[in-house]
Picture 1 (cartoon, rainbow, N blue to C red):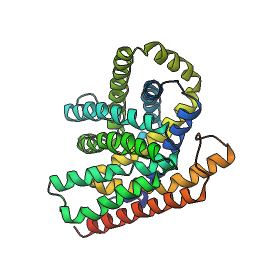
Picture 2: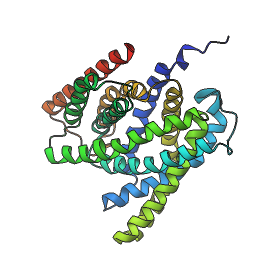
Picture 3: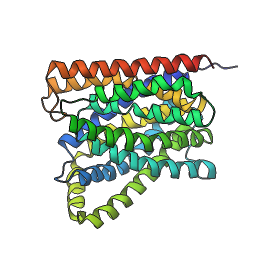
Length: 328
């Protein structure tokens, strides 16, 4: 019997996914602060959703054909069209992810990567509640981790302004993470019915399709359609950078999907939260090399002490959940 290398275990795949996810989320933040900009925040988010979505579809296909089997999932043997279970889950996950990504991109305008990555840990809370509802975990085991994640996310995302922090929590923790938690659960069903590469591609196709329709309809109703198209047009010159971002998206999401084939959703997300630790050096190093790269970031020491305390609480919650998972 052929054994898989150590880096192909669920834990290792999720840890690699965390690294690549931290990179692409930082690159998303760079894009909304420097490349795709508009006077209206929602229009700005819609514009990146369209451009990023279709760039991800096109380049995702190229990356999949070149690297899908070797790096992401050795079960990948080319595009699959006749798999109704996988396609339905991809449609649902893609549509939900379009909404989740919209709120995340909108939230990116309010802060730096260290803030947004920390807030993203809220998905763990929602998926843990799902585990309780589906009788895969007991409520008593999740009370303390849930409280630690909620408090830690607020502290880790603090930027000196309570109003901005609360807005970020609304956009990212409740709206983006709430939708993302649903997507994570649906994704597991879809990837188990196919492979990580095919599900990534079809999910991204439906994310781009749903996101484009949503952007056109909402922008039209708001009277911002002209601004939407002008912002999209001006963003096309940044396709090379966005394509590079999508390479890390391909690695981060693809490896996460494969990890969920053999492990529980909440366990994979717990390991993925390692990206919180990476968010701080990425933000500080990026701003040191290119001041203003992530917009305005706090420089006061006391704010970073609060953020660090929040990260510690989140990591503490992760450890509690890991210990509980290992006892099952």
